[in-house]
Amino acid sequence: MQYKNRRCPLITNLIEYFASNFTFILGYTWDHIKLVGLAIIIAIVIGVPLGIYCSVNRFAASTILQIASIMMTIPSLALFGIMIPVLSLINEGIGTLPAVIALVLYSQLPIIRNTYTAISNVDPDIRDAANGIGLTTFQRLYKVELPNAMPLIMAGIRTATVLNIGVGAIATLIGAGGLGGIIYQGILRTNNTMILAGAIAVAILALIADLFLRLIENLFTPKGVKK
Image (cartoon, rainbow, N blue to C red; front, side, top):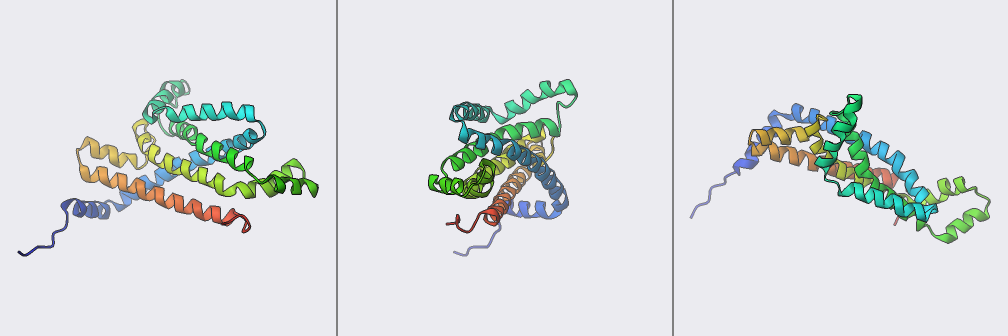
């Protein structure tokens, strides 16, 4: 029996779609990067200080982590839907603002929890040594605790980033743009090639973002902390 080499039609269609719509996909990808990037920056500015605060106030830690956990349980589409009537009061019911707010809320749990855990688990002997040489609380945090906690903090940021890249695809339903637009158009047209192309683009972006953040983690983690 002779077997003929046949390329899978779906793979052929995908290759052709990416080749003929590269600029189109690149534009959607850039919109997705801007959306998720802005949300992650804001989430870090909020989440890392909250995580540090939780490490020195265990009572507050329980409350803050519970609230962040509740936010994670709300379905993404429902959260986007909640943003519409609330932000419509300032004429921002759809678009980038509600999407960014929702993504920031989704980012809080991994960032706060990892920061809190990382700071709390810094070796007490290291803290004692820092106090022994006369460092202030802020100096100890900046020069000792944060560098030692960096790998775990960055793990939380990576988790939040990858999560937001996936959730951000749904933000196209409220006019925020991004790679979800390709998937949504594919659904409307019953075009499996477009749906799969959008999903693949989201997955590739998530992998690249995770790799990029790993490089940043490696750059800012002291050599003595690296394993």
